[in-house]
Length: 308
Image 1 (spheres, rainbow, N blue to C red):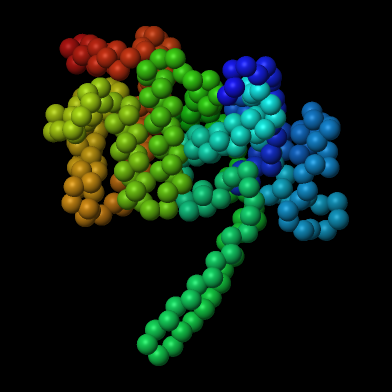
Image 2 (image 1 turned 90 degrees about the horizontal axis):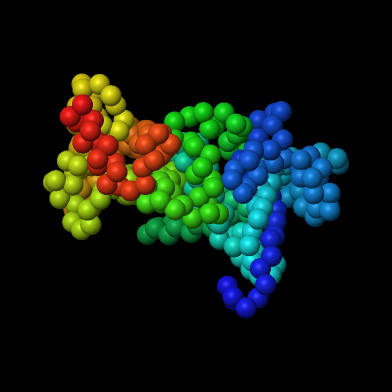
């Protein structure tokens, strides 16, 4: 950004494909973003009417569901329209990751959530010793994948503050860790390779809980398991269960990295995802109740729990 140029506030609006709002919900506020339907857009931004053309051909005066939803980004600080557009486009990936974190469902369809709606045509040619074959396919998104409303924020870990982090850099170390972990979780939910996605969840766990730099040792694994147990459960037997589960899951992470051979199942992915969301949920509680800011504050909190 050229510091000599005056800064202005801009609003960016784009079609948003893959997500929709439940009937009766016109918009959903997400920090400096709004996910909205066409009626809300045209009522609040009448000058945009006619700007966005439907990409799916239907009968006259009908709007397909896939073309009915938009994302609005408010308060973009930039020196000109071109820079505002660049900021908006760069931010969208982080927004998608954060939304998928809230939805918490792993699917190959997640890759299609975007501000771009394109047909992806693919040609394949296979040749054998005695025969050959060619084929083509079109991977298209016709209907929204997920429907959202305010209820999404009632689930553990889905604090509305995570959307504020998209446009305003969090100040405390703990909030920065939350922001990073949410992004890794979103990427894991997009990744069609479950092993790679599991590794991304493991990185999210390390981001949230490790306060030492360097090699991942047995003591670090023990720290991860213990911290996760104390943050997610209050009863002794349940803490022991979580501690064992995290150790087992993290051993699989190590097996992937060091031996390149382990079998990650959907239940492994979901177990680690559930633990991560509860940890983030607890972090938000501790931010409010105990004003924690640093990872060492978490260490002190767990020490108090250990001896209480």
